[in-house]
Image 1 (cartoon, rainbow, N blue to C red):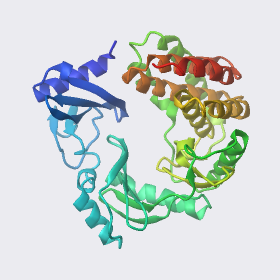
Image 2: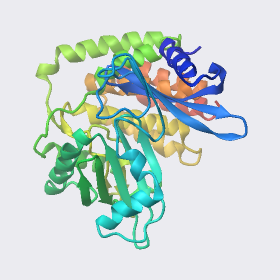
Image 3: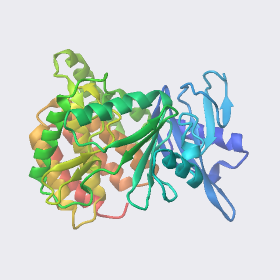
Image 4: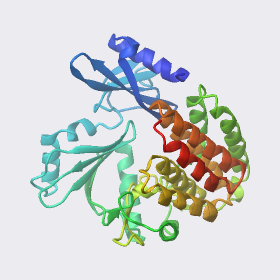
Length: 393
């Protein structure tokens, strides 16, 4: 069954476009501002589907790029056609070949090919890969208000010995250009789980020594949105109740917790390794760098690894589950790590639910529930989740 706010967004978009609700296929949804943003594909006969976004964040933008409902200054909802994201005014211009080429030429880079969107979080950021004659260049598109902070985070990391990609240049319009990260992507590299965890802990220690640029956004603050998004999934109710209790306890003792600089979205997809897989040569996406509880990075890393194991081809799956097991043994005594892990897993459950992967939803919720119940549970979920996720969902 579809969540109430998804049904609301679908109905709103269908009315705005004058189409049947059945022609709209949900592709993504996530929290943003005071609400969220949902992406739908609108199919027309004989034509490629168009991607529309329904935004209920009520965040202000410099210029609207689509339909607005309610107060123009703080609309109840807005609708835009990708890539005309009103929060990322530079995305539409740089997403096209000629504009991206002109931008790179301004920075002394010639012969670039058409850009490819590698990642997109509506309202937050987009990452484009631009193949070049000599090297690839990465273009990050952000809210203009975020550029200076992200540039400062990259600079602080570089000064602190954290191996972030070299910055080429940036624009206050919301564009940052950077070199490709050194090393082999951890998602494609061969690594030994214990050695990778050692390298991750070394990276976390290096990050902790960087001067704080402000507070990192904690994942536990997303729990209400995740709970709402899973309200129609009956199996999620007991997990949400446990997560709410864990988060309440975490907030109660927050003043007694250690605080340090954290990555803010740490997982092995952000890491680039040496040829032997034993050292980290590059780390990307330090946009969320800031002062926070060290458990944030440990919980995020474990959650992403657990879900990755559920989706990893069988030949590599045991190694990823071993990474989860050893990580849980290393960091799982901390109740805050387990709370952060569980909240991240609820977010992953929403994504799996939206794409109809019911087996993954069950495995993800089981992992979250066991992690909240006892320390050693995450390791046990590895075997159970692998068996569940190995079947077509």
